[in-house]
View 1 (spheres, rainbow, N blue to C red):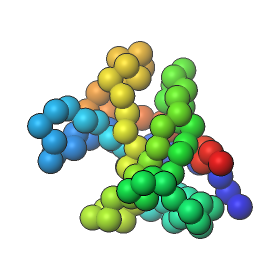
View 2 (view 1 turned 60 degrees about the vertical axis):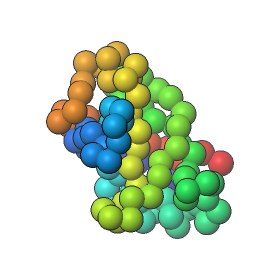
View 3 (view 1 turned 90 degrees about the vertical axis):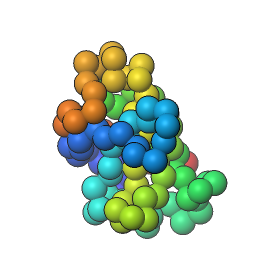
View 4 (view 1 turned 60 degrees about the horizontal axis):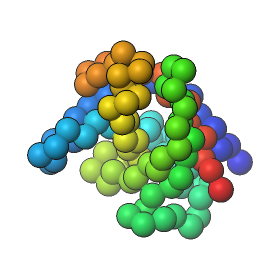
Length: 99
């Protein structure tokens, strides 16, 4: 079963938050694959992942977005700064589901 994906996604601000939270959407097909690969999820339906954008690699969780029918990935300010990207930019994301 597939546990790694590479895809392009546009960084966006979470509209409901007062603070600046930036996310990228995981494509629907990859989100469906993640659901199939991980039958037991963490709090809020989260799934632990290792992510790489450019030269930055980190461990975080993706969370289900029922409105979009996919998972969303938080992208920290330190990563955005290191990679020179921000809201509205398209980034190449390498994502691996962790055990």
